[in-house]
Image (cartoon, rainbow, N blue to C red; front, side, top):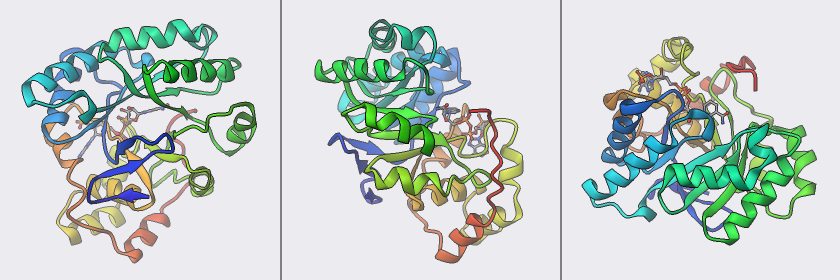
Length: 275
Ligand SMILES: NC(=O)c1ccc[n+]([C@@H]2O[C@H](COP(=O)([O-])OP(=O)(O)OC[C@H]3O[C@@H](n4cnc5c(N)ncnc54)[C@H](OP(=O)(O)O)[C@@H]3O)[C@@H](O)[C@H]2O)c1
């Protein structure tokens, strides 16, 4: 399913999505603009934002500027955004249009429902209408696990192209990932490095740093590569250009089956956020 040579995966919507990107949660203002541009300069072609992050305008500005400065076409860049539960999903046409207006990049490659909500089916249908109008290319879900998917999927006719959930070595979702993948849906992990405040535990883990040393790469690269070899797309967040570049260099080494098994054994079912 994953094409490691091209660094992309074909979604069930027919579009190609890069296997690694930049997460922009917690990036604001100039830091956000500079980080997105730095990612695009390092060859990263996937950017994850959300209405709730309050930085869609900055992401859009960075994408437009990078297109001019780096000679990229809009089709070269894959932008994900999300609409939030509550008032946004209650009036989805308006909130979807607001995302498009704030981003101002013509169309959005992927729009997700950020969390389950009482209006999620209605909001999903609204996203479908924007797909028909050519304003969104693919649609999906975030923070939907097995139970939520079993309840949601019978109510919609378009299969989500992507599910974005918390996934890292201490919260591996080994029961959830194969289920989602068996439906032909691509899985993307958030908090790949454990999330802010938790990265030291993961990057300093002895097993992970030992594997990193053996390959001459960083702990972050080992964790990201472990995700890719499990068929999980990664969107590490960073405001540091050196980390952003490092996080994109994931294709020059491969973990052995034994190393994958060693990291699989670190699972603690330890969530780092409530959803
Ligand atoms: N759908 C959802 O509900 C949801 C929820 C949470 C997150 N997300 C998405 O997932 C993305 C990733 O999550 P996140 O950014 O919160 O957490 P993360 O990627 O697990 O970790 C980010 C932290 O790791 C550090 N870091 C990044 N690369 C590093 C490297 N190579 N070496 C050392 N430290 C490194 C960053 O610091 P520096 O800035 O110093 O590099 C930052 O403190 C978010 O940005 C967002 O797009 C989605």
